Length: 392
Image 1 (cartoon, rainbow, N blue to C red):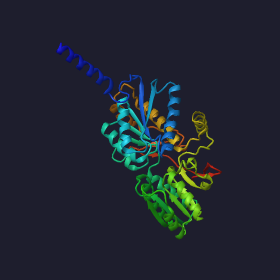
Image 2: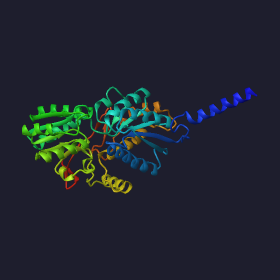
Image 3: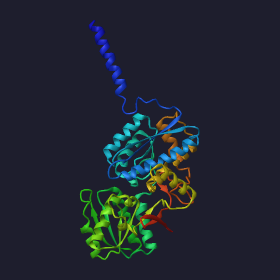
Image 4: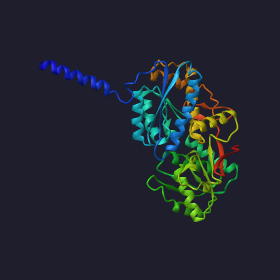
């Protein structure tokens, strides 16, 4: 009798472990004729505007592809995990998606979490494409990671070029986050290019993640030095505070930002009139009148409560179509292992040309380093909306 009871207990424990030890999604039956694409980014927290936009842009592309019959007849299964712009949570999300059966990673959306996750995908030999993590640390030394966004050096260099070529200012101040690889990377290359072009940097002031609510000291130094333009290679939350505090001081220079500025018009309780005339370089202008942009913006507004898509949404859309093009180029099938898929896509990415939303007439192309080649666009905020400018 004791032997029977013991055997029954062991059986019950074994069944329980099989039901509960597999991790999130492990008990789900996998579709053998589908590509499993996982996504990671912040859908809650301070950086949620980036993650939700990237998630939604990708969803529109996936819906289009699936409705058209999939990729060579194979549909896409898509699951997106929230990392709250936190590196540890991003690693946890990656492990969750691996348990789910992920074969390709779309993400992560922000730079700091992406650096850690990219190390893991490199170890696992899993193909990764990020729509918006722009630091070169994301791709450095890796053959499996590709970017759809401009790298930080490109953004810094292109911003200095634009300011010089359009004669926007002769004296420039900079406010940047020295604790953030995204911000400090752009700032470093902006300074290099500005010096090459003879632009005068009259103030170069840093802040850190622990001191990003009061910028009066940085603004006062720029004002005292006669800065006519302030370059802000930072995210929109801090930029909105800087604009408010500059207005309180009666200081009204030209403000020039990069892609992290995209979202400033959505900051809660922010007076958007303070952003009038703010310029930024971005790969996407929602007011463009080409057929692809009009179609995308229309679908996005219809699907997401009238919201206008930003560049993160457009980069996300292009990332999914890059995956599709690479899969078709390489002849990849869903029954292949994630590692075999990765090996095939590494080569295919350098052979494709995607006519996306965020490129010019030449499309989007990738080098073996994982860096994308495309042209930036300049926009200015007028009457509470982004208006495209001639970036040439």
